[in-house]
Image (tube, rainbow, N blue to C red; front, side):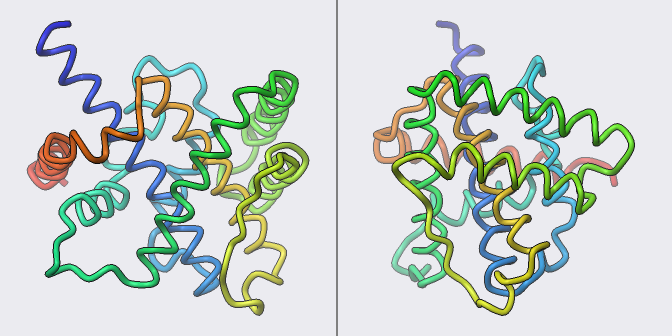
Length: 223
């Protein structure tokens, strides 16, 4: 494999990791605060990634690297973690969601009928989104229902922690479920690019370096 090929694969893995972390952060924000707290663009990018199933590159799935700015910052934070950056309860919760979504994706791959059903459900929601914004409550509700009727029926389930006053609102519950579906989408991309969990340990520096370069490229881009 050429050096350029290796670089491209690493870049794709970083983008998918960022997409997954971005989804988990937004799940936290809705569950804990009842809002995505100024991260509307990140929310849109995460939800839209569910619909982009025939892209030529991982970057296209998220509408460009800029759509993953939040996820890339989170990834840099976690990869660069040292004793100077304490692991908070929020960090631990986010990482729990991260690995739980990966576990769900691994289970999902052995359920071909469910995968087919998810594909059909996404197509229905995509048709609906032709007339509404992808973040419209009706679209988010459709994706949430799809998640509930498919992935949430697997043996392993994700327990989302938060404030009941927020989670009891239908719009917030739908947002959480739609974002979990987006997280699974990112996990699918990650494994399509040859991801293995041991890479977090043995390729940590390379992952961090690529993440930093991607963030620097965003800072250098004209606004």
